[in-house]
Structures are given as structure tokens and as C-alpha cells.
Image (tube, rainbow, N blue to C red; front, top):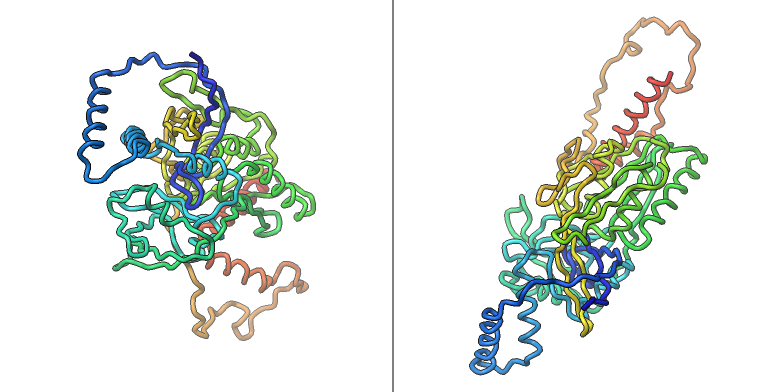
Length: 445
């Protein structure tokens, strides 16, 4: 019998609080499953399951509804497979589908489980969690007065969710901190703007992609057009594409973003045990930057769909990847709706970069590694280095003095110092772009 359910492919990472019981932002690539499994049902094991069910119904200290027992059994089947397979009840399935719209309620963090604790994969830009100071890699050990150890991820998420304008206190263990940190966070409606852009310096653009949602590809193209318009409608000299703390998202949008910078070639390939899950996606557009240099920023919070983009641009030698090693999620989940309004989220395949490399549990290794540093301007001690012009009876230049290009704009210097202080990685990425552009100019002279 052919199945008439519509399945969806998912790429992503952890649970976005207030929204999804998927691992990260959902990835939907609609397809119809017309195959059925020929696997035989192990009758002896089914009898054992039925026997356990009966013993619980008869002897457990409290009465438990049949529906609850059966749903728990299904959850157990999925949870024993891998961290990304799960059973989605009606509400969780609804939350999953709403998650790609970019608006939901919660704290604004993507989470997973590690050693029995809730691990923050990445905070979402401009959300309560990000503003409170929650960071990628934090381990949540208490939710208000409740100990997280031993709690399921689903139960932890339910506690962290809640009505907007209500508070919750997260107790967090952070690497490098001697004692746990406490963050009191007010829940809010999370509106994720997945694409932001600005001009860093004349001719050099910056695009931040915080998640891959339904309109990310189109919004990125608009951002590129605006950057060109802001720079006298000329082609950009270079672009920083920021994918740090991007937990993933829609596969189609990861392909669209990659396609914006590639003229041809494979973007990503997907291979599963069932050949019906095998797919290869290729670029089919034009390079909107006309081969201007790109630096892609990644870190440990960059996962799944963001790793697809970074891997595609790296393998095609279209961009330099800078930062720290990414998260390393290269599996694909298929969402299979069930008749009662619930669904299964089942890992069905692995994905591979254009060179055929699997980054599962490895991540993207940056071309240039950067530590997570913060720099500040050296204090002025009142002494300045003596130069030739400071010496008494120094010779004049012998040419007519011109201020053209001789003096640096103090505002420009202040802007550079501010960027270096606020975001050292972005500052280094901009310097690299300027260096590449200068080398290219020299070659073309």
C-alpha cells in the first residue's frame, strides 16, 4: 500500500525555545513517499512489548492512560536512535511548521542535550537570551529551582517556554568561569530577521545570516542589491558573510544562498540507505558578486545548513573560511506526518560537501583559525615616537606639500578601532578582504 503522507527533510540543530521540537530550524524539501518497507515485524519482541504494557497497566503505583503509555513507547523508539530523531506530538509538529516563519515565542536560544544537561548551541540575534549574555557552549544546569540533570530535552523546553513578559532564571556553567552564572530572562515573542547587512568601509559589505528561513535566499539577494546601491551602484570590492551561531534551517535556502555566489557545480549531495533519499543539488545561477572576494565567518555555533554554505564555498574555492571549527551536524531528518496529527522526525541520510566530504561529528575546518579574542586600544601614556620631522633642522620634503592622502581621517581611525573592539573576527575579515583586493589590483596593473 502506497503512503500518501507528505514527508519533509530537516536540517538543523537543537530546539529553538518556544518553537520547535526539531533539532534547530526546520528544513523542508517536500517530497512524496511512494515506497513501503518490506521489513518483517518481530513478533516475539512485540509480544514482550505488549506484556510490559500490561504489567504497567496492572501494577504501576498510579493509573496511566493508554494514550500516554503508547506515546511514551513511541518516544522511546525514536530517542534510542540518535540525538536528532524524535516523536512530535500535535503541538510539537505545529511548532515545527511555524518555526520557519521567523516569529515565535520563547527565549531565543537553540539547545541540545549533553551529559544530561541542556547545552546552548547558539543564541539567536537580538533575542532575550542573546541580550542577557547567554553564549554558545553554555550548559544549563537549573531552570528556576528545578535541576536539569536527568530531565528530557522536551520537558526542559516546556519549562523554558511560557507567556511573553514572564521571567525564568537560568543557572549556567560556562567554560573559564569558576562558579555557575545566573541569568534572569524575560520571555518574549521572538521575531527573527534572518538577514542583516551594512557597509563596513566604502566598497566592502557585510551580510549576517542568523538562520535559514523561508525568505532567507530572497532577502540575501535584496541585501546584496542594497549594498551595491549604497556603494554607487558598483560591484563590491569584497563581502563578509557572517554565519556565526547560525544553527541551520531550510535546505532550499542554504542552496539559494550558496547559489548566489556560485555559477555552477554541486552545492550539496544527500545519501541515505534508501536510494529514494539520495539527491544532488547544484548551483544554477550567476555569481552576484562577479567573483569579488568573500570571507565567511563561522564558529562552534554554526551548524547544519550554515555548514552546507560554508562547505560549498570552501570546496569551490569561492571563499576563505575564517573563525573556529563548526558544530559538525551532517545528517538529514525526514518529517513523516502521522494520521493523528503527530509526526515522526527520523534521521534518513547524511549530507556531503561538493568534494564528497562528510563533516558529521567533525565540522568545517576554517582556512584561517581565529581565537575568540577581545581587543582594546592601548592607553595613551603621553609619549609619541620621534620621527624625522620632529628633529631640529630636519630637511624639508623638497616637494610642494599636499594634504591629499597624507593625513588619515580621525573618524575613519575611530571607526576601525570601534570595530576591532566590538568584533575582532569581523575586523580581521575586513582586513583580509582589503588585502586580497589590493593584491588583485596589483596583478591587474
